Amino acid sequence: MSVSTMHTDDVRELLHKVAGFDQAEGQERVKQILHRVMHDLFQIVEDFDVTPEELWRAVYYVGELGQSGEAALVAPGLGIDRYLDIRMDAEDEQAGRDGGTPRTIEGPLYVAGAPLKDGYDRMDDGTDTQAETMILSGQVTDENGQPLPGAVVDIWHADSKGAYSYFDPSQSDYNLRRRIRTDSDGRYKVRSIIPSGYGCPPDGPTQKLLSLVGRHGQRPAHIHFFISRPGYKHLTTQINLSDDDYTYDDFAFATRGELVRDAVRIDDPETIRANGLEVPYKEVRFDVQLVATEDESLQTRHERPRAQEETNS
Ligand code: MBD
Ligand code: FE
Image 1 (cartoon, rainbow, N blue to C red):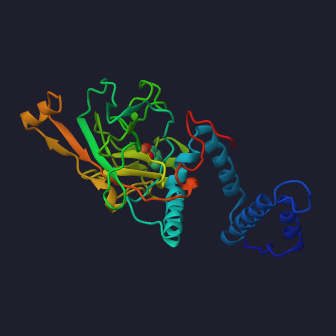
Image 2: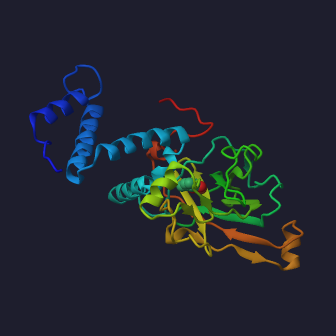
Image 3: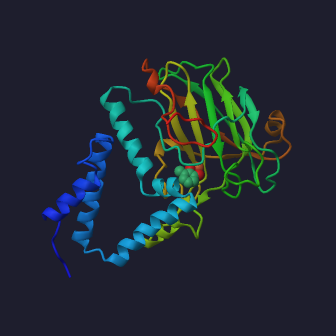
């Protein structure tokens, strides 16, 4: 049965009151956006003849999503994070501050306040015996290739099971999370382990929705970065390792061609010893170019809820 009620006075008045348009209190911007959201939701119900059963299932899905703590996980799966990047890229281009290393999404698994070291540190606590050793290094420069000393490279990644410390309480505090201040030559270096890709919890609401549209919930092996220095645009990015089944098939849409890196196996005994290691390891290089800006609001990461980060909102 298909009926048309969107243009009736009843629905118009209902939406007007739902959005608080008849109230003096409240925020105008919220009213306008909520009005549009509810109007468009009702329009979808009309256009697709959504049944009460379907609509209630969706309402309870939202509840389930909140209870599971997966709201910020389904978001990248629905392209929200990628869409915001597309917008910020377009804004940068319009303002003439594009260029430098490309941004890509932050994801929901950052933890603020990782140990801060000069030039080098080891990121893993040595307990992940499945994992291959990784030496990750690079140089931070401006767009002309001038080295940038004193930049903070904030790095986080998963273990060999694809799990992140803090969210995986079995890992030690700040395992696989470090901040490295670049040396006088703009360089940073860490010893860590090669991460595995991430998979959404198979029984959670995110995977449930993805499966309903025939999608998987896998990310390739990747390493996250925040890179900042006064006078330069804050950069949120990641590298995705090549040779992963999902390198170009990421459920979170974070892969960008310029951000794919090989993990190169090093088994030459002299090189191994020169790096203070005893066994073969994999080397990953990631050089970063920052874009200069005088706008201080662009020099720090934008606000969002983050673990262990104080927010004012
Ligand atoms: C991750 O590790 C991640 O980076 C994103 C974007 C989503 C889920 C898990
Ligand atoms: Fe991640």
